[in-house]
Length: 169
Image 1 (spheres, rainbow, N blue to C red):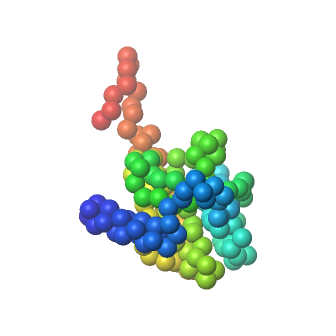
Image 2 (cartoon, one colour):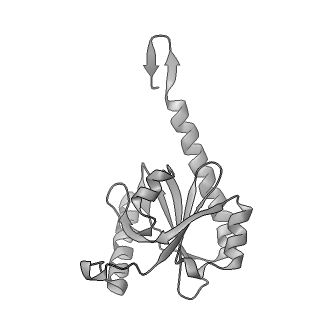
């Protein structure tokens, strides 16, 4: 299954490079601005291009308890395992806000279609090829946040204190 996702990711990356080219030193300027949103559990959501964010998407994110905290130049980055590439916030912004799990929403030029990426420390950057509309995000973003919550719960349960030390089950 992971091979299928890896293969699909490579196809997506090749398509992206074919359509947009690789960033070069001659292209020092960023083509996109991002908007970073954070919710109380410290899960993030990065949306680019910022200028294509619709009032309907803003309303959806507010309803999910996300607050806009920062915007700026998007940079091309890979996942934590150097897999897949997409635009997102700079790494120093991610570290400043201590974001280990976040979603990336790329609004397509039609202003309707949205591609979703998931950045997670253990699994890296996942870029499914499906294009979503806002109505579908109303279900999918909460489901992804629930997965993040369950991962954090499992991580906390992995370490148990015993007298004289820590053991992992």
